[in-house]
Amino acid sequence: MFNLLKADLYRMTRPKRLHGYLWRYLVWLACICALVAVAGVITSRESADIVFGDQRFSSLSQFFGMYLISTGVLQFLVCLGVLQLMLSDLKQGFIQTVIDSKRGRALYAVEKIVMAGIWTAIMELILAIALLALFIPFARYDSLISEPGIFLLWMFETWICVWALAVAFIVIASLTRNSGVSYIASLFIISGFVPSALQALSSLTEVMLSLPALSHTLAELSAWLPSSCLAVLGSGGIALVQPAVSAAGLLPGGFGTQALIVSAGWIAALSAGLLMLFRRRSI
Image (cartoon, rainbow, N blue to C red; front, side, top):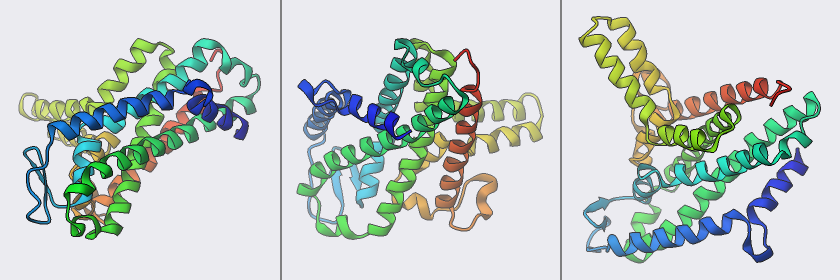
């Protein structure tokens, strides 16, 4: 597995003429940050708040939540990297060289899951550094140091939520083995279409079909999706101390505990499904 990880990391960061796709992403990020800096000129330094465009933020995690999660930038870049790596293996035949045995197939699946977590962490760290560079010159220091523990926990829970989505992207690519279908399906996940559709179906079954039990089940299911947790985390570290959503309301630790359980549960379930899929010889 470690050899596979080294191979993927090399392909990602290949230094010769900067051919690794990580460098292309860094160029794109630099352009995005430049546009954000121009479009969101800060208009006030008079309080602990930071004003970016017409948005006011009282903490670093809230600022990060808006521009890292709510905009979908982190999820989108993770999606691009994970699908590019997975689809290139499937299309170029690389996968066939490492899955000639059940053990090889299992190691390949585990490596891709671990690689998705590493890629998510890399993208989150790079984006955080870029946003911090925009934030520091215009914020008072109490905006930066008022919530160090909550901020670090928020970064961790954001990472594990996006990692769960990254594993879902791998499963989609492995099932479809088609670039267009994989990217479109992944964009539906990034946009939050699935929980929105479940909420709409919940309202429909309650109002038009008079099926309150089914409506409640659909609403509950919507709350237990990683994309739903990310939508709440987009409000920043304050989300972690809010009560858990739906049936998880009795969980100790509030929403922070729910987001952790949901993300870890989906990673485990999707990983198990991927391992079962890779047992097929036709893969």
